[in-house]
Amino acid sequence: MKKLFDELSYEVSKYTTQKYSTSFSLGILALKPSIRPAVYAVYGYVRLADEIVDSFHGYDKEKLLNRLKVETFQALEDGIALNPILHSFQETVNKYNIDRKLISQFLHSMEMDLHKIDYNSELYKEYIYGSAEVVGLMCLQIFTEGNKQQYEKLKPYAMKLGSAFQKVNFLRDLKDDFQILGRTYFPSLNMAVFDNAVKAHIEKEIEEEFKEALLGIKKLPGSSIFGVYLAYRYYLSLFEKIKKTSSQNMLTQRIRIANSQKLLVAFKSYIRYKSAYF
Image: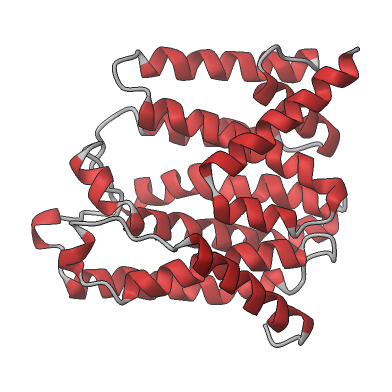
């Protein structure tokens, strides 16, 4: 029965999310049960594309990513895919009428990762839009469940949150991106002169985006508000730890939040949410 394959596909996407991200997994658990599978499907697909460009060393990454691109749009047209992650994703896209331009923009940013780019402000914004902001918009289309007016109202905030998350990732992964993948995303950043002043300038930009994003989180539907707020609090705690780490140490270690600390963040976030103090 195809129903079994559908269920399996969403389970594979769910497992992929849990395997790669404790923070997002816990955040998704705080969403309304009816929309959780769709968000797992989006994350599973995004993770699959990201792994191609970040991890599949020794393989023809460009060929693999192009294959995923072709199979993605074929699956959307056919309404089915043999790849379970892609199958759950295409079903979610078709069910929630997710704008396919968002998918194209995401894949474009993944293609950018295949090349060594000296990022200026314009390319930096282009990459962040495709790699993070559009993912937030895909999820927002799920959260608003077809309410176009609500989607347009919340769209700027979703983009700010995606951007803040991605920039925190850039700082967290600064060491590995530079030393292993040969990438630096921040515009005109010279790693030889990455100091506390440069780091503080980047952090100020992220702080402003977090503040603006929170305004939008408070306006989300009840089905998604706590789950998104929880993800926001996880990233904020990671950001606070990054701020306390010197620029020199940022280049020698990858900043992490222990799972026990994440559970504490979850508990405190729930109290703040229920008390309307967030």
